[in-house]
Image (cartoon, rainbow, N blue to C red; front, side, top):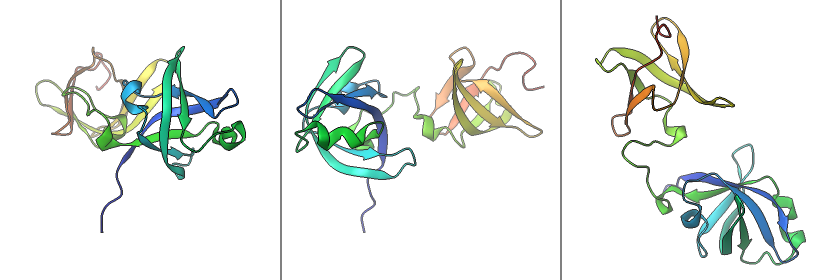
Length: 175
């Protein structure tokens, strides 16, 4: 029995554009040209994480202001695509460029060990939050949990293979 491929969310559908099956999409990827290339297969996912439709083949795509316009094969009319408003577009992880050495997918951060530069353990990442001020990670320490901004000035090193972060937290945060 083969395992189902792991999918990553790469965009969110906005609304139909015109009358010929085009949709506007807000990209949630660093490389939308790769993720939305014509001929690529994608799946539509609801807010509950369940697959709603797919695989769908991208027939055409192009940048449109800060969004993208997509057309799926077989979806020729506005009525075909109107129910897809607000759904997420997911692509197989193997079809996307892997993260660089110092990068990590947000969903992978849960369970990462958090250490100081001198190797003192601070705890494990137990949550990731996207707040208006930026990305925050929740760290479960030996005595309490704390939130740490996930920014270059605080996260000194990301070891994706070793599942650990080396951090320099603001003074007084972990005391």
